[in-house]
Image (cartoon, rainbow, N blue to C red; front, side, top):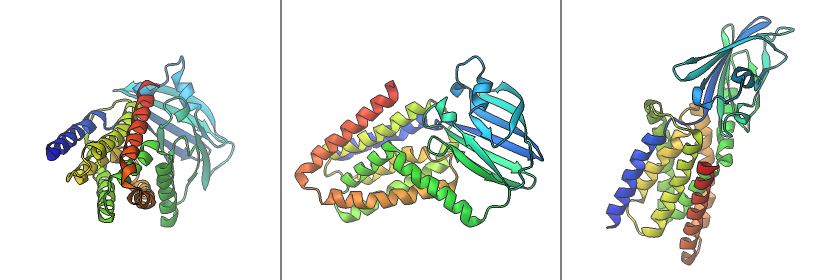
Length: 307
């Protein structure tokens, strides 16, 4: 009976990512510098474009390139992608660096991510903006390997601590472990599943709202809490974690590999003390803790769906 229930939960989890994948709220941009002028192209899904009288101005006003002045802008719909092209003039040259500000999350959704590539001659740089990183510096020189690694890993690690659904899942993962060896096994399986999702994400064509996707992450916590409550001695817990880990991996699939590396390192560090605390929790408190985890997950799910 227990095995059948675990298999049922796993089967549901297998098909759910197909419905909600590829829905990370994301836009991309390319800035091409040419002396004191530049051309910028913004690409964003049409369903995320603000419903205002002049969406082009609203979108482009949220991206500032140092002391550049926008001289021309035009937008068009290309098969469901809103494409804006703008020209900029600068009072002087920026041969080494350019300060960039991006606050697109304020007019789209709170978890919106903008991936910007800045190019000047043979040199280019790539920056990731979200609500936590609204300012950046494009460096028009080949960045050192150490600079690239440090920047992306730091941002990926920071994201772990700012992701409430992810932190709740890590707490559930720690609570699901019944002995030290299982805690290590579940943690490794979860992190491995996130990397497997990196291969699956680009191959899933569907796109729904980012808010709905966040709700599914809350459901992964609920799935795990139900497993702990109804199958305290279940033998397929590792398979449940493997499948649910794909959800969280899909939310990282669009980021650079080093970014995800930082997130994985931070998650591994967090799992350690959480597992230690859970393994030392009195047995009589395990079920109440699972109930609290389930309640928190359902509340977060409700907020993301109905807010």
